[in-house]
Every structure is written in C-alpha cells, then in structure tokens.
Image (cartoon, rainbow, N blue to C red; front, side, top):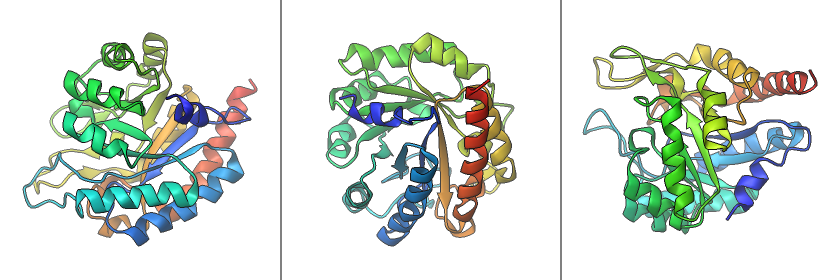
Length: 273
C-alpha cells in the first residue's frame, strides 16, 4: 500500500518529489512525449517523479468545454505511460464508483479540491489500497484538512498526501497562504504538496474559461520550496496555447528543466542550513 509513497519520499539527497504532466490526456503521443522529456530530467536531479494526467475533467465552467477522449482510452494511455517509463501515475476521480475502475490503471488516486469533504469518495478511494492525494478545498482552512486525511486513514489506508492549491480570494482569484504547508504537515502528519499551477488560476472569467498567471509559476514554486513543501504539482504542456484544458495556467514544457534545476538548488541549500 505504501510503496508508491515511499518511492516519492526516496530522494537520496532530500530533494522534493514531483507530480507533473498535462491537465487532461488529449492523445497518446502527447502523453508519452511529455513523460519522455520529464523522466530523464528528474532522474538526473534525483527528483522522484509521478506522471499526472486527468482521464476526464468533470469540473468545467461551460457545457461545451473539453472533458476527455473517453475514460477507458485515457486510462489505458496513463497505464502505458507508467509501464513504459517505470513511474507511478496519478489521476483524479470524481465519484465513489470511479475509484475501483481507475485503480486498475493508475498508482495514485487524486481527490479534487471541490470534493475533498466527500466522505463516500474518500472512503472508496482509500479502500482500493492505492496512494491517495487529497487536494485542499479552495474554501477550507489548512487545519480542516486533517479530517479528510483521517477519513482515509480510518478506512485502512495510510498512504496519504495533501495538496495546497490556493484559497479563494474575492470572486475571481486565488491566493496561497504558505503558513498552511507546515500546518498541514504537522496536523495531518502527512507529506504536503504545493500545486503550483492551479494556485495561479483565475476561475470563472467572463468568457467561462479559467484564466491564469503562468508568469508567476517560478515565484510560487520557489516560495513553496523555501517553506518546506515535500512535493510539487505542476501541469505542463508542449504548447499551453492550444491545450484543451487549463492552458492559461500551465507551464510550457521546455521551461520545466531549468525551473527544476533552480528549485533543486534552493532545496539543497536550505537542507544544508
């Protein structure tokens, strides 16, 4: 049960771990190409890595928004990425009935922020025996996340992480309260991940398409590493301008290597202080 989490915590030099990939699986070639470019970078920098990709997007602003290429097709692509590159794979689920299905293909089940209090969903995910990553609701205080963690642990699964992804600030923006990272680490006694790219979303713009501030990705990530985040979550795409979901806040793939190098330097410097 804890094998995946132990791997993510296994950096020999105390580096952070990384969950990264596209917002949603668009096709097999895109997914394999992203993994092929991230895996060697993470190996060189001693960053334990899990490939991230949603097999379906359930939370969309408009009914005509892209939601996926089909559940089974996308899940098989995620499974192929994991097998070809020998890395764990993470995807999000939205209803309790999805947990067992998705668990056949991936290593980590992610609970979306808006659903982090859904008991049936958390319990169903926990009972698969997979590692569970719970995103903190944009509407919750960091202290409240210990109750979500407890639901998973009390269901017999102690392979849990929590992800900070920003807190609602006004009607159309998010802000990261970095105090929440050590609070959740201490309260839940679990690793805490910073979702860099979703923290820079500007939800519910006038067009019904989420906006973002990708120029601040490095700023948010540096601060997260500085306060001791155990892992980072970054959505990335070869060309965010044509991405079918969340392109406005994704990192361009060719910028990822340099960013990870600089963040690793920060982490190793802090570790030695």
